[in-house]
Amino acid sequence: MKVLLLGCGNMGAFYDFDNDQVLTYAKAFHLHTDWQISLFDADAQRLSLVSQRYGFETVSSLEDVDFGRFDAVCIATSTPTHFTFLSKALKRQVPVIICEKPISTQANELKELDVAYKKGSSKVMVNYIRRFQPAYSELKARLGEFISEEPIQSIRFNYKKGLLNNASHGLDILQFLLGSHFQFSNATIIEKTHDTFPDDPTVSCIIPQDGYSLELIGHAHSTDPVFDLTVTFQTKRLLILESGNTIRIEENNETGAVVYLADNAIQDYMIPVIDHMKQLINEPGLPDNFQESLELNQQLLLLLNE
Image 1 (cartoon, helix red, strand yellow):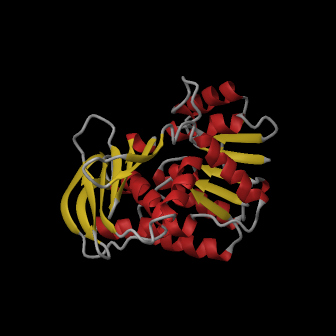
Image 2 (image 1 turned 90 degrees about the vertical axis):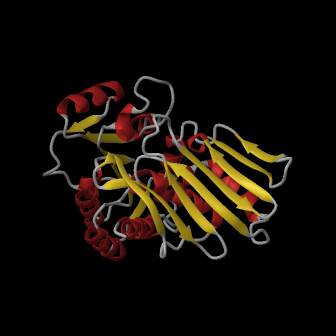
């Protein structure tokens, strides 16, 4: 297996550089000792540091690199570079491409990528990490046992650090679990605050759905991590807490009795991501999540422009 890893930032290499967890592409790839990993980063010092740690081959310039010789290309660079690298990988029909989210902050780029994707044969994973975790596949199956008979009454999502960069994580896992796509028209915007990204504010809003409301609550000024979801059904509540590491289903009554609990749901989360990448390479008929992610990206851009 030949893999090109673009970017040695937090997701690329440094979230787990000084601990034993597996939270980055570099460490997850390093577990596959028979793979050939080529590494690129615009920062030469960072590139050297990561290469020395994991023994990867380095690429100092991408001008003469043929993306087509790789089985997979992983794009873990900054969002403004995604379009260029995705376009190049799609043109060379790389079998599997992994791209960090958001895909782009520009609507015209999303349209061009959609056309290029449909013309080619590449599978594209947009790395919404939770949907690739075994705990969330199990949760989806459990919800399937009652969701068709249990109308949703409300959804509340607390988050920070950008609608595109972080709220999209929660919205993606909700769509994955519930098996349906949200409608973003007729949203009531309560607040927009630029807390982390200049082109991606944290937005608080209420978005009407069919029979219930989806409420996004931004915590732009919080110094603590914020990512928790509550989906209230007629007789049950689903809670996704601690950035998704704890999953709980409880009775929707005064007792709040817990009927399902999963801890450590996203521990070493990059291992299942890379396992899924390998599965996409080995099973050509397996679907990816690119068009679903692209549609979500487009809808959130429209919401930002309201």
